[in-house]
Every structure is written in C-alpha cells, then in structure tokens.
Image (cartoon, rainbow, N blue to C red; front, side):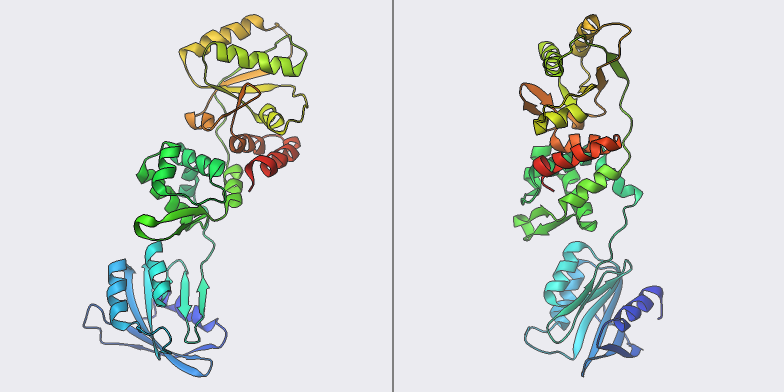
Length: 352
C-alpha cells in the first residue's frame, strides 16, 4: 500500500497548512469505479475523507465516469468525502477537467491539486526540467514553428491550424510542439474542443531557452575583401549582387541588428547567409572578382544551416535581413560585446 507515490502524496498533504492526516485504510474495491484507499484528514476544524482512485494513466473517460458517480452536483455543498486520483500520469486536458470538477489528483511528477471544503484549493506544479528531448524543440520543423510564434504571436492568441499554415508545418508537428510547450509551462490552451486557442505563456522564457542552447557551427565560410571603404555602400553593393543573381540571402548578425536599429554604426565584417542554389556560385564568382587579394576580409558568406534561418526574413532599406528573432539568437551566440546590441534589438523589435 505504501508505495512511493502514496508516500509522496502523504508528505504533500502533511505539508499543507491546517491539514493533518489522521488515518489511512484500504477498501474492498470490487468494482472498476471503486476507490482503493480512504485517507481521513482534519482540515482546520472539519473532517474530510479522501476516496482515492489509483491507476497508471488516467484517461478523461474514466475521470468523467468516476466524477459522475462520486463528485457532488451542488458546488455550494460542503462534502465530507472528496474524490481524489493517484496516477502515474494525467494528460493536461484531464487535469483541467478534474480541476473544473474540483476532484483532486497527485501524479508521479509531483503535480498536486487538492480542493478543500472552504472553496479554495492547494496546487503544486513542479517546474519541469529541460531534458535532451526538449532541446528538439529548436531543431527541424519545430524550430520553424517556434520561430513563427516569436516573430508574430507574442501576446496574441492563435489557432493550431492557422499557425501550422503560417509556419509551413504539419498539424501533427504543431500539436505535438504546443503540448511540449504546455508541459514546460511556456504556452497554454484557452477554450475547449474545436474552439481552443493557444497563447504563449512566457515568450521571454522561450526566447531565453532557445538562446541558451549551443548552435551547430555554420557551413563553410567564403571570405571576401571588397575595396569599398564606405560601409553603407558596401552593404548595398553586396545586396545588389545577390539580388542580381536571384539568390535567396539574408544579411545577419551585427549588420542586421544595426540596420534594424538604424544606428548608423559601421560593422567591420558583413555576414551573409545564402540558400543553396546554382545562382549562388555566379554571385560568389562576381564577389570574388571584385575582391582585393591579400587584404583583410570584410564580407563573410556562408550557406544557411537550414531553410528556417531564412524564414520570416525582412527587407529593410532594400536589404534582406534575418528576422529580429533570428538576429537575436545569432548575437546571443556571439562575443560579449554584442550583448548590449542584442538587448536593444530584443526590446525594440521582439517585445519579450
């Protein structure tokens, strides 16, 4: 009877103010919807018995069946019996159902909801740890989805199908990613059934988590020394060459941030990412022909690590730039002197 989950539940109950565990007893559970344990409590001056239903994985169907049979219909009623579930896992929709029905629960992760007769409830949801599988959020198509969310949906609600279309990601990937964000308490659903919408719960924390992860190094870098002294003219010349050869490109890192912020400050090295294409070689050949040999490089061109790097690029003053979000991520992986620039970009163009 005294397994680990039960011991943890008893410790959680004992740790609540004005709550004391008085007795525990097993019940003869001959029916599917019968409680297997009863825990006698003293809550302030009132006696309360928890009817504990134990299972490995609590489904919404079983929760509804038990609630229909054991939960009080009158919300104003002060029951002497409280329905409670002790489970290894409870899906988020089922937890929300139990909370609405004022049925308590405790999971092996330490998720704890305990409504008391006085009308309030104790709730504990431990901060989840970011494990290796959570890092997959920032790879592949999931990364593209999060990129879209941070670019366009900070502080706004959205539907699963709409964000999937906008990000160019399947509905299955979108749903799985949003539920992982919910597990990490970075997003929350609003509404129910077909009317459900989602909202980023902590976009700033999501951006911080992304920027804290180590990125793969860029692909091979082509270095050029363009003999154009004026930084602004050099930047416009580079953009014109790529546009001439119809290359999908983005100016990135410090040059992108300075352009967004209209700082006018010159950057020693212009960094560009390009999508792989046959036209890229024609553009690179023209850059090479215009480059001064044996001089300090002032233009670095690399193939984009993925198409998502170019996703949501923005054209400013005739130049394609990485999105503010991607620019911030790039700067956060760079040298310490970029910290102030990254913070200014985040404050003025990302908003979280």
